[in-house]
Image (tube, rainbow, N blue to C red; front, side, top):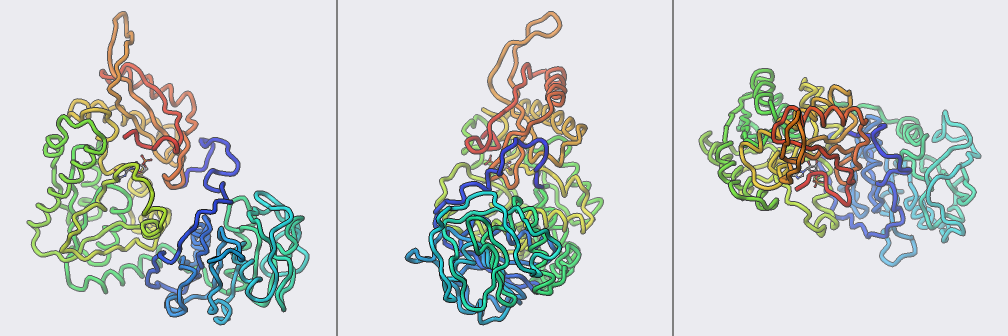
Length: 546
Ligand code: XMP
């Protein structure tokens, strides 16, 4: 659910495409390589912050693509059935000690190659060309002039606006290479030898408007790939895999109501039918109508074997007198585990547990940055199950990005309300109630939240915001209603736009939408006397208040 729209602040370029000069050493040897599903484009990771983006862009063109470490062996890569190789950019200079080198199999494989930025410099350097620090460093927009006919630029004009981000440049080409395009600061902005192409600029970022066409030309005209990576194809292939993995056994799945576990469960159900049993724990911290909706969609519409456990009282009891956000999370996580275990035990022997792990989780959980990142909050969700474990994991979505998961969900016939549901934290409304969580306060917040969500939907903004919700604060202020004095709580409204929740901007909601939300909350929810709008971005704020 990408939320680029009028609601986003005007920042050019977007924050996640800044700081290209970051010298953060990216250790890529830990990027996991998943088993092949079909012919693929292998993206060799040299540590650019755009490596995932390259993979996504290729997949958006319906070609399967995987990221692999830059020191991957040919045996590993060959197993992925590569039909083309893309060399990513990276923060190193080819002259740095310890700078990643070019594995010999890249050239020896004879596969079409697209080398981007550092990838190009590396290729030039190792094949006998020359790379020097640029006289004029190029960071940001530039224009390249195409000077030779090449399939890579088919259908494009001779002048192309592009996005550059480099301190070094190729200054002499290796033998057999020809010049295709230049910019004022980088003579060798695009080069070719046979089906090996090099680009100094970044075709994968939105700031290179013709980047999609360039990548499509590389995939379809040069590498002669077919656009066969589609949701239907994925479903077909994934069901076979699931059957092969679980054989005649049963699988257990914790449904949270979120899109990942919903799609994982539906996919597994498509593969093994009633040998899948889902457990849905109502922790009493859900939004209005949510528990009923999950039961209706999965039990009544999708005919899943769904065990519904109402453990609201147990969670509320565990949260009594707790005000510390981390302690709330800890108790909710622990209670969930207890309830889930108890229910699972009553189901007899089930060797497999389904998880909605996604591709970015796989990559991020193994990068040094995430290992060393300061713990801001403990995230508890159904992924935080007791894995000390007697279960083997079934993770049918681990090759997919979030937007691909949504497409697969639609392909499987899940309704839009599930497929395009906003992310919702595992600890639910408990981390949106500052202070103690009581049933009265939950009821008040639920009513406020329903108003926020309802008005956002009526205004047609659902797909434009990443998340929108209410927060109940313990702060009390004076108001006046009719002729009387009121004294009640401040309710905060939070709405953000984001690409991936790592960074977020507060959504520029129209004033009339904010006005309707505020008026309705104060009129309809007796506990609320005042409504404020949160105008903090992430960073420095987080999306949730706790
Ligand atoms: P923050 O508040 O850290 O949130 O900016 C980033 C994203 O994660 C969600 N979130 C959680 N999800 N368990 C979850 O499953 C949690 O404890 C949790 N805390 C935050 C949040 O809603 C946002 O989408």
